[in-house]
Image (cartoon, rainbow, N blue to C red; front, side, top):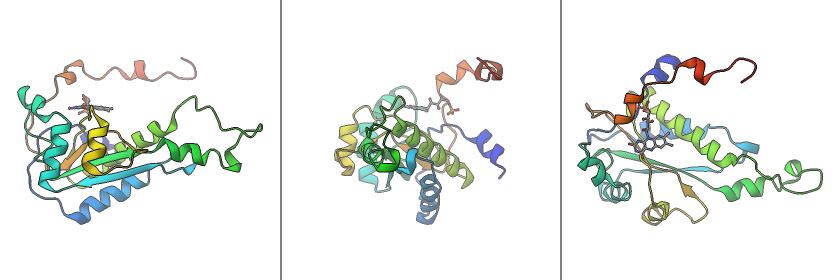
Length: 196
Ligand SMILES: Cc1cc2nc3c(=O)[nH]c(=O)nc-3n(C[C@H](O)[C@H](O)[C@H](O)COP(=O)(O)O)c2cc1C
C-alpha cells in the first residue's frame, strides 16, 4: 500500500474481533515502531504488548472500558486480541543529555524547553498506528487515566510512563466518535508559508 493510502486509511477504530493476530505480525509492527526517532538517539521508548485475555480485561478496566460501553461503544479494548502499551522514560533523556557531547558550554544539561520524551513516544505511537494499517489491521487509542494502575498491572518500572493503550486487531464496523463531527480544519489554517 502507498504511504499516502496508509495515512488516509488510518483512523481510530473502536470495535475489533477477538481473532488472534499472528505473533510475527505483532513483532513486525513493534519493529516498525522501534524505528521512531529520538532526541540524541536516547531511545527512551519501550513497548509492552498484551495478548493474554485476563490481562487485557484488567487493562480495559484501567481504561474505563465500561464508560465507553455506557456510551454505546463495543468492548473495544478487552476484546481486541493485542494491546500495545507505549512507554517512555524521562530519566533516559536526562542521562543521555548529561553525556559529554550533549552538555552545554557551561557543562550543564539543557533546560528542556520542549520535553522531547513526549514527542518521541508520540512518534512511536504514530508508527504503531500506521504499521497496523500496513498489515491490513486497524488500531485505536485509549487514554489510561491512572498510569500507576497500568504500571502495576503490567510490571512497568516506576521511571517509565505508559502513555496509553493501542488496541491492534481485525476491525469490525464501529460506532464513530462524536468528536469527528468537528471535521478537519482547513489546510490553510494548519499550514502557513514562510511566516505565521
Ligand atoms: C493523545 C490522544 C489521546 C486520545 N485519547 C483517546 C481516548 O482516551 N479515547 C478514545 O476513544 N480516543 C482517543 N483518542 C482518539 C481521538 O479521539 C481521535 O484521534 C480523533 O477523534 C480523530 O479521529 P481519527 O484518529 O479517527 O482520525 C486520542 C487521540 C490522541 C492523539
